[in-house]
Length: 326
Image 1 (spheres, rainbow, N blue to C red):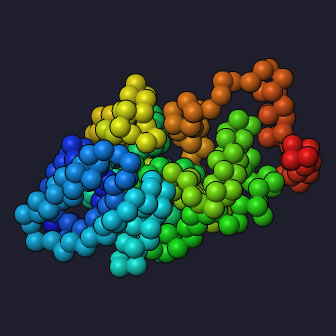
Image 2 (image 1 turned 90 degrees about the vertical axis):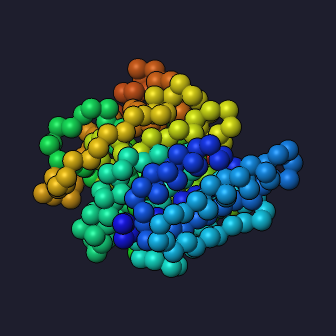
Image 3 (image 1 turned 180 degrees about the horizontal axis):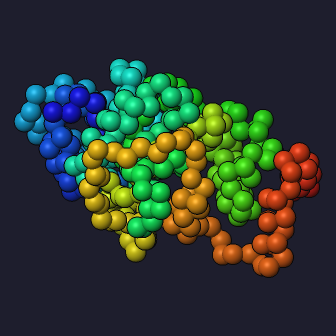
């Protein structure tokens, strides 16, 4: 049986939930948290689909302490996962978290459990992810690498890390025009993409249909790192017309086949971000959602700014922000 608690976030898709729950049932966690959103009043048949999804997780045939957090009203894709995860960490110090369309490989649970213990007190590490989207790249021979990305398709963390989470991004205005995003990315398009998302999130007071961008922002402000495996330990099967954010069924990162994590884990000797692995992650996961590559002039400008000493870069970017903001 699995000693680490598992949290499952569900909504209105019994068909995908069944596949995720089947893998959880194989792991047999001693404690299972179930977080469910309520139906939208204007969606015909959604109440029945929500009920059918909740029925799936009642098929527990092992000794398990089940805690349920079910909403009668629809809280949305931002507040419902965020509030549910906060509820989980009110009860336990660490947990493995899955959504209803993220099917884990059986070795995912042991991988998370071992790393949750190994890095329990290392405040540099805030997130243990299920895939780095390296598509076969494994240059260092270790089981995982350290990253500045925090993908949420199957992950694990600790109460100490989640305590930094801020759904509404209250601190965004204070850091918006600094150059710290350039310390993470050296591509103006990526910097502008995240700046736009954070602007929208803060402007809406956190009332948006996502929570994972806020988690990334919160980890960045803490100079936090994630752990990502070179192989894919979770496959997102939720791409399609009934999805909220993942409608592109032909997306390269949809339905990625999983493969087993090899044990014993091969741990990197140093906690240092793998910049090349992060570049591959950006190309695979982030860039498809960003506008096409800019002109030669734009690329040269980006490289020049990225190469500047940090004080000069901050001065130039602050001046640019003032011009853009009028």
